[in-house]
Length: 212
Image (cartoon, rainbow, N blue to C red; front, top):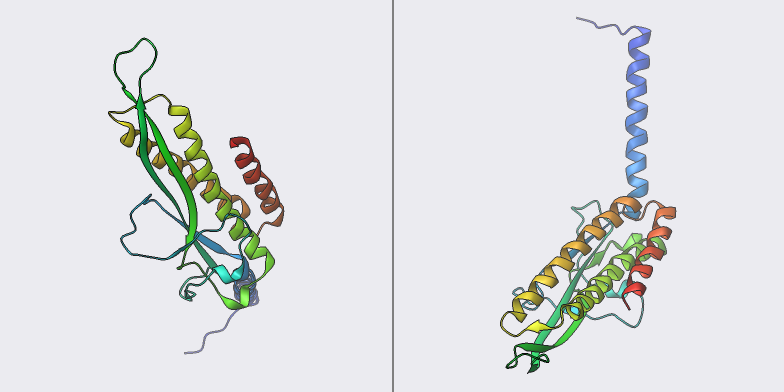
């Protein structure tokens, strides 16, 4: 049996073919700008014993991405960041007019770092991708800064539940910053949208500055 295609059928098939090729070219071209990030929600313990690098006095460099690139992913880079904190009680005190020492002054230390799993596909090491990853690390800094600030707002802190309150504050801030992170990736299209990337670069810095 022989099938014959009429002219409209041929034009329809040609249209689908052209659109498919165009879509493939689009994906191949823009793969170089798509990045992914992961924040860890464990504040102190690290069961998998990853090694971490604290970066607070400079911007990210490609040498910080020491993990093995995952070529099963369409992303060209992935950064894993984590916020750590430790807290103990320096002393207890009482408020004027109250009996006893029912409050605690916490000694809180907060820091953030990226871990060894962070990776980049070598052929996509460029300034635009690195700038987008820097934005993710800046969100980690925002998380650490806001958490520390939120603990300060708690005072006076009862010595009977101060650890639970600080833990709760940490997870609340982390949840908020993960939402910001999703918005950052969504609005910048993982760094593809240069104009929105520029807006978010300034926005994150402003959010951090307001907390100081």
